[in-house]
Length: 270
Ligand SMILES: C[S@@+](CC[C@H](N)C(=O)[O-])C[C@H]1O[C@@H](n2cnc3c(N)ncnc32)[C@H](O)[C@@H]1O
Image: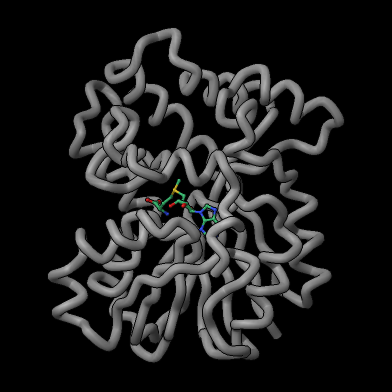
């Protein structure tokens, strides 16, 4: 893959400074988490890890049993802990984590060295981009992505690549935050959130993505809003970990103002 294809804000954010070490995250994961059922009185770093694992489990449960025959790939795997969890807890036949950033792939291989040694033919991490996936046509039973699609410059290419690599009947599950349809949502988000202002996050309306999926041939589209399980819990955790004025606190405001929401989207490639 041509390294020049990595957008500058993505290259910066996931380069030498390991974002997973930021106080907003914990345990090597980099997602806002599914806080459902977690006591928010005084959330700990362990709760934070649990929230991030729960988000993965929510996504992985969308792949129906029996799972032992399913060969999956994750797009935007980061440090690869979610792919290892998928293999360990859900017993898929194989999981390959894909990431656009070579530093993340290097970290994933180092952090999961033991799991890679335990499952040499079933777990792998490899460089690749959402719109140029390193898999042959119709070679996967499932494809998923956890809090990475907000970084993809556009989702049309991703939808087509997903359709290309999935076999007939293969499933796609994507979770992250999507923006509202209104004409001023993007501008208001860039005023509230530095990640939108500096171009790390791209405002993708949910309706545009579901249209992309339909045009790429996907059927059985289902979208679920899970913002209520994400933002209040995340913000409660941030209360104790970042200064009150830190811009990440504005995610809750953006959610409450209807500018964005967290979704799980599932679709089938016929
Ligand atoms: C917020 S992190 C999420 C990591 C992991 N999914 C997790 O939940 O811990 C987003 C990841 O997506 C990767 N990424 C960004 N743009 C990408 C693209 N176009 N194709 C593949 N990976 C991408 C980044 O390098 C980063 O590792």
